[in-house]
Image 1: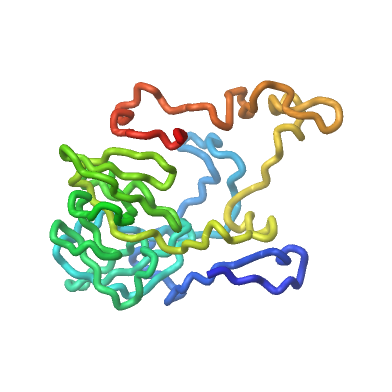
Image 2: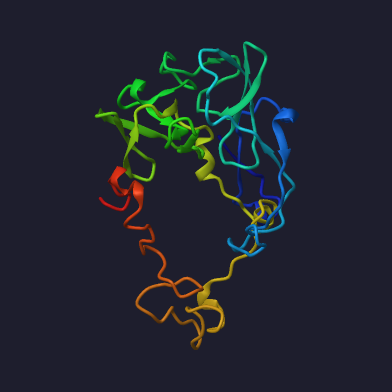
Length: 275
């Protein structure tokens, strides 16, 4: 739910904040590890993602994407905030006492009982193979490779849909619009990812973006011609070329960069760009 802020300054005049429905303020300490701040750099120390740096210190929550504790029921102990993702997370306490974090689906409440496995019931929060998921049901945390853990549909408010099943494969429609074949033994979790209003929030001011670890970005047309292909010109001039480019001269915004010989192309039934 969105909450409008009282405009005590210009920075918060149009700001909206999320009421996430969290049930606790502190994470399970044993399920967290320190997060090293790399500021967009790779293993060699080179900047590979621009405009990153600073931000509030965080701890990583260790999430269970595999859901491989089959046949053992778990109770939802709390719905918590995770600074490293847009969705909420849920703390599960299994019957044998083990605790694990999972992505919290929408409508999952404290006290609910969830399970995973071949014989799990297709209800919100349960994880089961795609071949057992009824057609038309929303799913998230979808595996691409058997047993490797959920890789697709993990951000706030997203869900994929099972469209058909044939020859050991299940046809899935992803949030981007892409239609893809995935092996029927791959697991997925029933439901839509929580925090549906994440996309509707308004940050309000630049300072909050800095807290989130984002540094300022400068438009290419505002730069010197030696710094960006869009730069230079007299006054407010356009990019001065048929199409936009990256700072390194490669085509941008719409130019296909996916390898046309990629091994998984055969599993893509419909591209996300096709109407």
